[in-house]
Image (cartoon, rainbow, N blue to C red; front, top):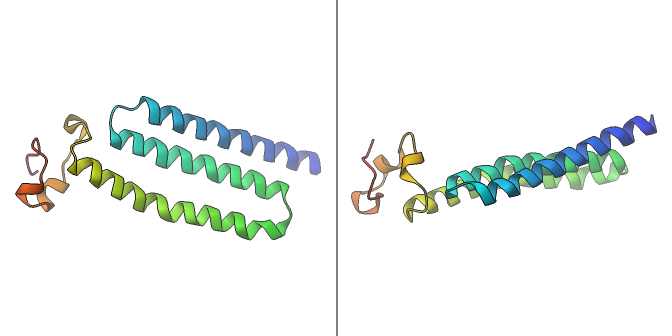
Length: 121
């Protein structure tokens, strides 16, 4: 059973590391802030969760609670951070307006705070 557990743990750790690597490549390659934010949030979170699960399988059960707290903190903070980064990128015109399929934020903002290329929906 220990050999199976070691193999499963190794696969999870390697898969998590690959997702983290892909997230870093996405941050470097995507053209605007929203694309970079998506790569960092989605792939990095999945990579970290896989690494934490692989580490939990290799450690004593008493370490499960701290590892679960790290995973929970990651899952709670990434959406909030994504919203803040996305709105900041929108308001500072750091994203390509052509990449937006719908500009829902333009309807909510007063006219003086809208992007110059926003049509208001």
